[in-house]
Length: 177
Image (cartoon, rainbow, N blue to C red; front, side, top):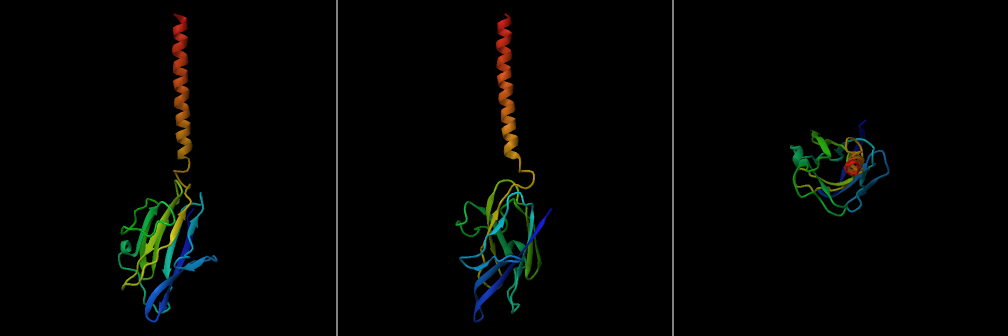
């Protein structure tokens, strides 16, 4: 089952210039500005999430670039203090189905599977408007990668048992001689 998450970004202006952003996780009490953006936390084993980002500009001037690869950059980072992505586009296997719905909305799916990860993302805008760079804490666990460690442990145990039985069998054969 896919869960839906809506993020709303509101430009904060000084005159005609956007100087900051407010980011809100819609339907929660989580919102903040630069330095205190709420982290989007996806719980372990909570399934895939479809994330929609909407620009809520009262003046209707701020827009996403036409190419979705320019509008959002996403990469896996070692910790929440690693900073913004340094490469254009998406470099995480956790993100799929990235699309630009219109000038003010983009949507993507976070598979949220396998190991826990931290994804840094940067939202970019047209006309030199400053970017916004919050964090996704991807809890992982959902999907085919959930039992990967258990399978490796079971395979290792089976191999160990096979080796033990092999040597027991050889010792038994020698005792018959």
